Amino acid sequence: LGAGVIVCRAQPFVCGWWVVPTGGGCGLGWIFSSYPPTPGGGGGGHRARDFQQRPGSSTLAARAGDRGTWSLDVGDRAWTYAETGPAVAVNAVGEGGPLLALTADGVLHAHDPETGEQTAETRVTARPVDPAGPLPVILVDTSRAYVNDVATGTVHEIDYNDSLRQARRFELGGQATHVVETGR
Image (cartoon, rainbow, N blue to C red; front, side, top):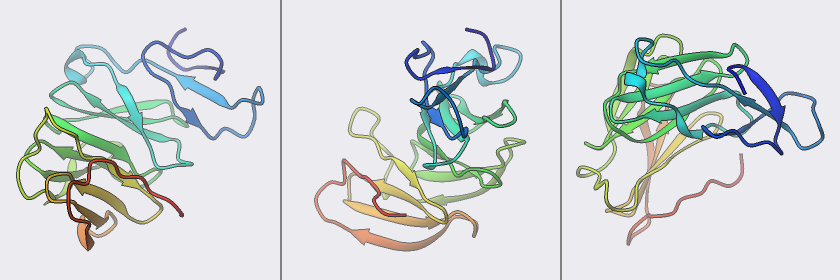
């Protein structure tokens, strides 16, 4: 398979795969598979793996080793590399929205998905993230992002359209090791 190939979901791609809305296909959904640029094209030669996206969106995010994060606009078939540092969680808001990356120091960063430039940042975890323990996740809906602080049992609701303003905090107690979003 080469870059920009669309194949049926029944043929998973070795670098990773994800389902995007395309409006047609083999009845199982379509898969867009692509390699990100290689050394010299950004990303320090690190391939995109473990893709995340807002449900229904055709913009994806993936960590790029310990240096940054990839954003993929499936519709334009365009990869963008953001120099985020070692991200422990990433997600893509979707068309017109930022690429989100949580770094090990507990800071959430927003990046322009077309240029990779940082547009905002805010601290969301009380202390640095332990990479050996359960990792936080970034869940995204149409207007907010949700980031769990595993150690404190807190889920932060972030308004990504307002410079990563913290809209609410949900104090769950214990450890927030597994977080899912329902609704929206």
